[in-house]
Every structure is written in C-alpha cells, then in structure tokens.
Image 1 (spheres, rainbow over the protein chains, first blue to last red):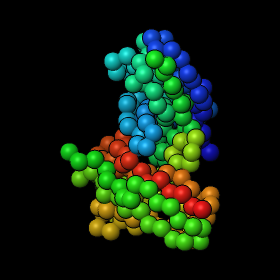
Image 2 (cartoon, chains in turn yellow, brown):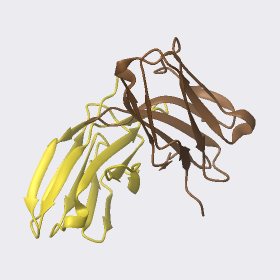
Image 3 (cartoon, helix red, strand yellow):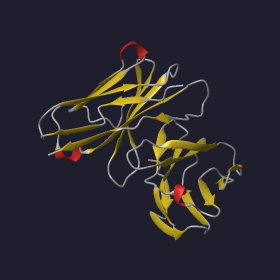
Image 4 (cartoon, rainbow over the protein chains, first blue to last red):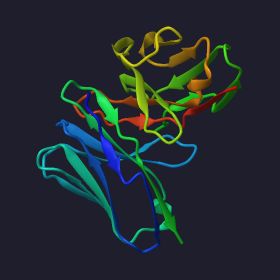
Length: 110
Length: 115
C-alpha cells in the first residue's frame, strides 16, 4: 500500500517567518498535488507537479517535486495569518489511485 | 463557473439510523469522488465514478455504505445503518478527466455526527 507521510503534523510560527513542510513516500507517484483546507471548507487545489525535480512558485509559496518523484516540499516565505490552514498533499499512484497524506496543520501568529 | 455543491452541510443522527448526502459536480466533469475525512486526518477515498460507472470502491464499507450516480451527473451517498465511527466530514469532489492528472475540485462537505 502506498502511503504519503506529511511532516510536521503541526506547525505554529510568527508572522514573517519562513517555513517548509514535507510530503514523503517510499513509492513513486505519477503526479502530486498540494491542497489547502480551511475549517468548514473542502480542500482547495494549490498546485500539481508532474516532472521529477520540478519547481513551481505561487506568490510566496514554492513547491518542489523530488527528482525520484517520491517526495515533495512546500516552502512559504514571510508567512502571513492568511496562510493558516491544513496543507494536504495527494499523489496519483502508478495504478491510478489517489492517496492523501494526513496533512500539516499550520497556524501563523500575528 | 459554479463549484461543487453538497447538501446538507450538517447532519446529526442517532446510531443505527440512515442518512443520505447529495452532490452536484462541476458541469462537464466526468469523474466524481466521495471522501471521508475524520477529524485530524486527510481525506480517504470511498468511491470514484467515471460518468455513471464505478472506477474504485475498494475502501467503501459495502455492508453499510452505498453510492450511486444516476445519468452521470449528481450523486448520492447513503449510510444505513450508521455507526458512531461514521462521524466525519463527507467530501465530494469532481475532476475533468481529459488528462492523466486528477486535479480535483472539492465541495464544502457534509459534517455528520452520529450519537
């Protein structure tokens, strides 16, 4: 069974700080998505990465897909209170199944 | 463009009762998913439809859960009878299946509490 492990589980930092969260697996994924979920809402797609080593930027968010397509990271520069939420990674396995990690709950203190 | 619609938003039932959730996907999206999200965890796929056919229901507890997607558009998920451990948020998502990458668009979810 393919699993996606996200770390850390919880992260609380001050506004203006930088942070990185991780999504790791021992298996290869065809693609990987990052979502943000706010309380009482469904997850919202942030980005999809497909190619090993791919880097995508979304304003202050930088996403990287590992060279071997087994891991990914999300880096936030100068975090703001609006970045608070649950960050989920989801991978498309080689047998076309969608697997979600348990998420990193991020809290940015003003 | 309208997003994925779900109803009801909240439901409280007693154990052994039945409950049904409804989902209307984004127009033109052929693939529809139902997920269960227990507090503090990521979504777990229950069932995936491609048009009105089932693609994956390997994690659906078929003794109590059922789902259908009539005419390849709206879908309903039913639980009968409910157990305490079914308390969770039930998320519906849809995607356009034109390519291999399954970028999903989620509805707001239905929060179910079983007492």
